[in-house]
Length: 298
Image (cartoon, rainbow, N blue to C red; front, top):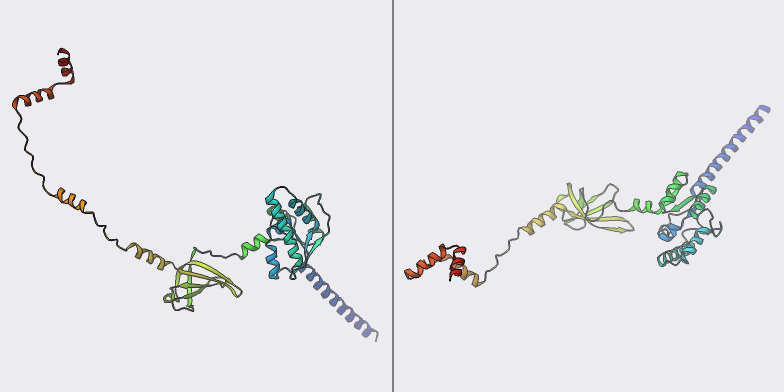
């Protein structure tokens, strides 16, 4: 009986230890997932954080330090009109985040002013509460990475989500099926984006070179439209082969051409008296010096 009691107690202790370990692991994982996010001044001035909040991707609490709000207030009272308008826009973004039902945004009381600087205050808060810094400031991003603090950079997010191919770019694409219209063909990019190619129904099952025309973003996904590069070249060649009619020449030009084609009449020299002709020949033979000497003698 004593042995059975000891075995039962050991089993109960093992089960209790296992349950406590599993619960601690879940709490730790939940805490890591919902770590606080400390928002920087640059993100509020930028304003794109509201679009991210509207999408519902931010599940953690957004903490806006009071020192950040104080910096925006200082910039809003500044004499520079550009900085003043940007700072006021940042204050409006704070109000929008507080009124957004899809995100929990709170003002974190850390003091009106940060003596060590707002950036250093954000890094200090992120270390103290094991949180994340949301910023688009390049220098703050680098310093946070050096100190081992996780950073949410809105610029990196926008760079990741932007289109891989912009209108005007070309690529090789395999056309897999026909489109809704008879002249269309459909292909897909590596990420699954559907590309509709105009005037390409005859090239289904082939790999062709296409040029992207435009992109369409819908709730169902992204769709791109393109055209065949070969068709574009053929159109250019056809346009260049169009012969232009020769311009009609005015009647005056035709008459001048007819006159130039006719042989010119041989002009017979007019006979002049021998005395004058001999005198002219003598004048032609004289040099300028001889004519000056003759003039001086006269």
